[in-house]
Amino acid sequence: MKPWLHVVGIGEDGLQGLSPATRAVVEAAEVIVGGERHHDLARNPGARRITWPSPFDTLTEKLTSLRGRRVVVLTSGDPLWYSAGAKLGQLFAPDEITYHPHVGAFQLAAARLGWSMADVETLTVHGRPIEQMIAFIQPDQKLLILTTGAETPRQIARFLTERGFGQSRMVVLANMGGPKEARFEGVAECWKTEVPPFNTLAVECIAAPDAALLPRVPGLADDLFHHDGTMTKQEVRAVTVAKLMPMRGALLWDVGCGFGSVAIEWMRAARYARAIGIEPRADRRAIAAENALALGVPGLRMIDGKAPAALAGLPAPDAIFIGGGLSSGTFAACWKALRPLGRLVANAVTIESEAVLVALHRRHGGNLVRIGTSRLEPLGKMHGWHPLRPVVQWSQIKR
Picture 1: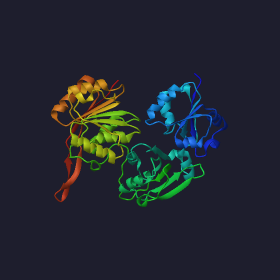
Picture 2: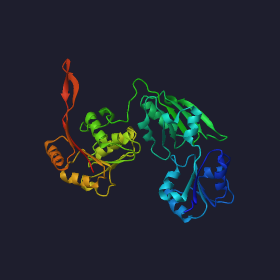
Picture 3: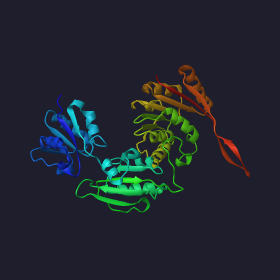
C-alpha cells in the first residue's frame, strides 16, 4: 500500500523550517490534523482542518475514515520522541505511514545549553503526573523535561528543594526556534519566575551535603517508606528486586503488596516499568500510594482483594512477587498467568509458608535460599548485632 498518512514534525519556524520535500507534502495535503498552534504554523488554505480531538483515541476513527486521501498529521518536533507518531504507529500498518522528523525540543535545548545528549536524561511530564520526575533526581544529573504548562517548573523546583537539591540550576526555554524564543534562568530553592505555558525545562541537579540520595538500583533505605515495621526490609528487598529482573515496560504483580516497597523499587529500576499491587487492607493501599507518589512512581496501580481471587482478569505479568498470602492456590494462579520467561519470587517468614516454598522447590526446581541479616544496634554503652527475622526465598524463571 502506498503511504497515505504523513506525520510531520514542525517547529516554531513553521513551513519555512521544513525541508522542500516535506513542505511540498504539507502544501499538497487534502486534510491536515493538528493542534491550533500547529495550524497557525502551517497554513494551507486548500486543506480541510481537523483539530486534535479529546480524548485522543477518537482520532483513530477519524483517520481511518480518511484512508486513501492525502492526510498530514502535524506534531511538534520529532514525531517519534514523546509525540503522537508512536501512538499512530501502533494503530496503522508501517506501509501506510511516512514520518517526517524535525529537530525537537530536546535537541534544541541541548544545543542552547551546550549539553551532550548522550549524558542527559530526557523525560516528559506533559499530560502525565509530574511526580514521575522525582525518580531522576540524582547528584550531578542533567535533565531535559517536556513540561505540562507554566506551573510545572515551580512544582519541580519544590520537589528538588524538598530533597536537598535546592541549589540546582534551572533553565526554562520557550518557543525555541521562533521569533518569540525566550530563556529564563534561576535556582530551584528561590524559583518564582513566570514563564510561557509551552516550554522545555532543563535542570542541572546539585546536591547539598544532606540531600536525599535515591538511587534507581534496588535497596532504598527503609525510612524512605511509610510503614508499620512489617515491610520487606532493605537488604531482602534488594535481593528480591534483583531476582525479579526489572526491564523496560515490564509488568509486575506484587501479591500481598503491603506498603508497596517492592513494587516501587521495581518501577524505579527500569524505564516505564509497571506494577499492580494486590492488597486487601485499605490502610496499607493508601500508604502504598503515598509512598509511590513520594518516590516518583505515581503509576503504581493498587487492587483491593486477596489472591488468588483478585488476580482474575489482570493483564499477564512479566514478573510476580508473592510477599503475603502465600498458598499453593495462589502460586498455581500466578504461575499460570505468568508470561514465558517470567520471573516469580516468593518470600516466607513463617514455618507454614516456608513449607510451601520447599514443596514448590521440589516440584519446580529453581533457587531456594535463606537470607539472614543483622544490623548494628546500641547495647548498653557498647554495640552489638541485632538479627532480623530470617527470610526464606524461592525464585524461578518460567521456561
